Image 1 (cartoon, rainbow, N blue to C red):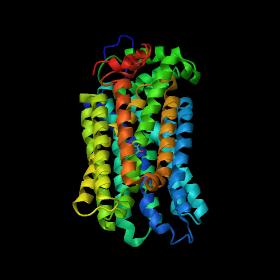
Image 2: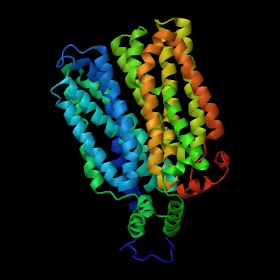
Image 3: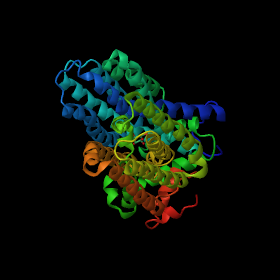
Image 4: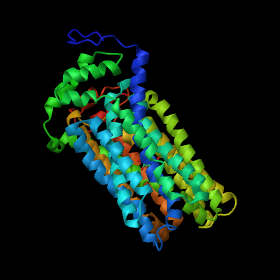
Length: 470
Ligand code: BGC
């Protein structure tokens, strides 16, 4: 902190340990939004088994609706949250999201009718969609560049932990058949998120973009122990003065990164992750595994997802985003090929060793997603957009992600019956290879660079960012 004109220096300069704690703590609180994202998308699989005991005569369509309506809510939530986050700030958006989570899960837990439960899932969806964009946005802006990859990816760790927690809760409560508690338990992290956020500060980059530099400076003193705070303020100020509105999206250089974000979003979903996350037990049971073995395999899959995300967090700021993305996507294709070949050779009912080979393929696939495309998508969309339109641009990518998720989820079972298990997994393998080729050509390296430097690169001709040093 060697700046020459700090108008109001903070009373005491903070030690770097304290600064580190502030940043990590803020990221962890915000990432509770990711935990809720994972939990609320995962919990339905188990809850579905017991809802019928209170609401009689539910058809499979009613159940599908209950599952997928959340994704539509999320799409709308992501759209709204970007605008709100750019207008009123990141912090109030996180607070509003937490409040929406509390309202949605309480409504679900106490639903007197199926119709109200569907309404509750929409409200939860709005919160999930909003959290999915505002959490990486906020963390990305508060984190110092050196550890931004790890901190933003706390969110992905929280998502995967939320999914695993929901599997375990579903499993643990199965004997009580208490689906209301399965939904309601999510109120705890939602309340913690709200309360914790009350003690957090607004994002410094958003404050600068609003011309509130003195406030931004105070926040930066809490969260930066290196470099020149003035330079960061000047950089963000200069960049936010450049663009005036979301119409900037029409500018070709911005359009280029918009396309990269949307492509990452769509590839993250059409390579099949949620067919495994949502349907693995169904798939494994119908392939001949017993119910409890299928549920156990699912928990193992969830655990691999969490563990490999931790590996990614340790590596993202060292090896960079691109090696993990490219290596991970290759692994996804390999895993899917193993699964597809097992079904091709073993038929749709797998016996003995074949079932375990298929499970091994699934674990390779999930682990590879967790080390690459899982975290890297959310991280990159928090890094590659200009500050002035960052919230709205992230919304577009996030919406594309939820939209593609909806399409894949709703059509997966139909796809299985139309082209068979082997055909479906070969399709996902093929799409992973297409994704790999695209990432290889287009996705930039953002490791260890400030958001301002990344943004300045936007002025280079199309594709030039991909040549940035790793
Ligand atoms: C994806 C989710 C997915 C999860 C699985 C996230 O990055 O966006 O759709 O369910 O990873 O770990």
